[in-house]
Length: 239
Image (cartoon, rainbow, N blue to C red; front, top):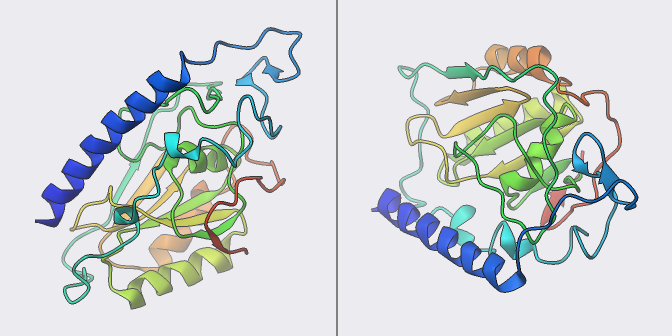
């Protein structure tokens, strides 16, 4: 079954990432104040490509090993259809006041308590806005700190519903990242994530989606950050 296959894949990914981190050495310690990458709030300065930390080009397999399972539907003749009887689920976390996520170099694996967190530690370099074949959460979590809205969808969602949601997101907010994921449920295989909040959906309701973006987009500790990112691996379309 598809769900069992995905669980097995995620377990294998955790093991392979552990072995990769072990092979590359111990996690990066916080930089001293005199280092060019030192940042008092985040530990590592954001937006500075550095081969010894994060250049958005090398060691990307620490976060994702490019397995096509993350963006492929293996049952295309049985797409996930919208269900009008399933209500959307909105959840907002109680983000601690004055919380600033830490930035981690690529020789350090980042762990999360949830499959789809609404805030948390991430990489120093963030994705350029737009649609991707796939982006790991270690990257897009940085975007939501800057006020972006992340659109997620299961690869098996019927194409028309995915395109409907993409169109709304693109027209509502320039600061967005669109990527498939296998971390959503079959009942609600569509989602939007902004700083501290997420909306999981079975169907696309225009009013519901636009309200979420207006209420939660451009929020976050650095929600007014307008600068685009440096990470563009598998970028398909820019805003």
